[in-house]
Image (cartoon, rainbow, N blue to C red; front, side, top):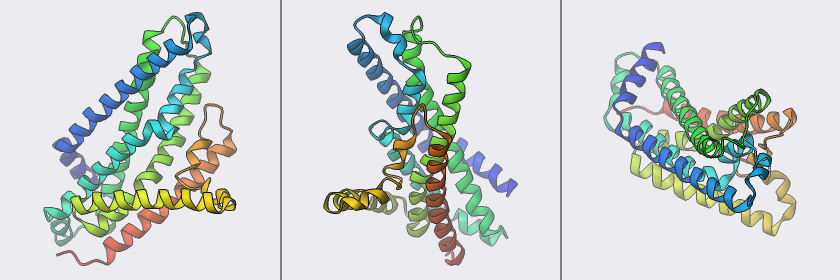
Amino acid sequence: MYNLLIAECMKIKKNIALKMLIIGICVISVTLSLNNIYSIKLCYEDLSQIESYSGAGQFCAALAMRHNFINISILLSVFGAIYICYDFERKLCQSAVYAGCNKLDIFFSKTIIYFIISAVLLLIYSVISTLIPSIIFSDYIKYNSSMILQMIKIYFVSIIYHFARLSPIILIAYFMRKTGITIILWGIVYIAVDKFWQGSVELFPVIDKVYVNTIWQINKCITPNMTYLSAFRVVGVSLMYIIAFVGIAYMLFKREELK
């Protein structure tokens, strides 16, 4: 496993898609920061009132509000398809299996690296989008140890939630093994399932109790002042999605004969 993780890291260093992804995330982060700066100036005519603006609140909004993170989620999912399918398209997975590597090690080394990359990029995105307004209004926006701890809690709960959102692309990638088809199928399934839930809730309001506990709604529990119960709820629901999608993906990879 260790050698495979090192090999994955070496491949990532030369990955052009990752470099483009980093640039894209930085652009989105700066854009969100500029939008926040504009909103602050619009909402607070007297900058002395800006103390009510919370850096932790913005940090949380960047990671947990759908209209903020949806573009990041799409970019990370597309990267996941490229990253996973690359080895199948170039017969690298097949070569590793023929060389005697365990399929379990191959699968989880790639999954672990993908999740680590996603966690780092989400941290870059949330820090940049929060930090720039804080620097611009440094005389008014203050941070303390309590707020920093609050942001750390938000981050770790949020990355588990985002892992759950990204796990379907792992399943589809191991099922299709072709980058283009994987991305298209993921897009179709994602939109279809989202519309299905929205339509079902409109027709049968009672379903809303189920809908709020899906990855399309559970992010609403992630707030700057979320309780530990809410945090455990988000983590619990997210882990169920991760285990289900990643588990099925591994079973497909384990049983399929590589050609």
